Image 1 (tube, rainbow, N blue to C red):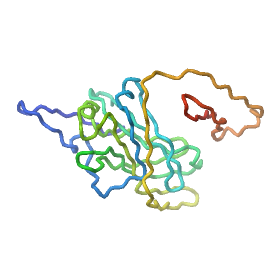
Image 2 (image 1 turned 180 degrees about the vertical axis):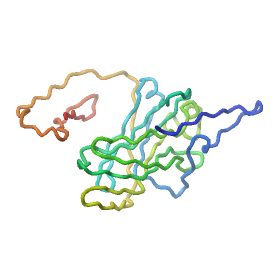
Image 3 (image 1 turned 60 degrees about the vertical axis):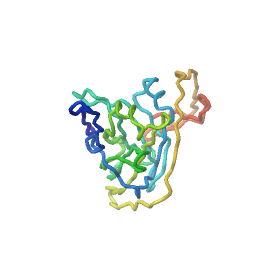
Image 4 (image 1 turned 90 degrees about the vertical axis):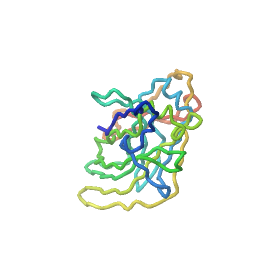
Length: 232
């Protein structure tokens, strides 16, 4: 799992500002430009809903569709302090069975005071059955809630940069990660509970479906958002 550390803010009776390095993250520099940036508005509402995780919309990089998953209250076995953790997730629909995608990437959170991203470098081997990287802890949840550097107007910004991709396959090849403009998404959390409803998906050719891959439903609307159902 990810690397989580707990730290104390009390030092000889004085307020002690914990440096980012004690949380297992480091400054990535003001020249760091992520491939994907995700701003979560009303972060406190996300906690109130009790959501175990939330996942971004898809973004494309180097021929693959990816998602960024935020786990706001991640706890490792034996750890008492919940951390805000991130995961990188490729779309299974863009992976090829039998191929392994070795990715080198950076997961980060934006520090408004320093004007730069702070995060960690990670690697993971993705394949058709392993589509979630390990959880990587960035900052203790309690520290984030108190911070005016990472949490501004109840919103925080998470990001990912994909540095390198190698594909292991019968015809092994390296994928060149091309630098493009940062893709930006926003998530607005509404503390209104769950939207209840029923969607019926009628399949006239069920026995003819190729269930080796996902089958996606037609688009339907939930709470003003376009959604899809998946069957495998």
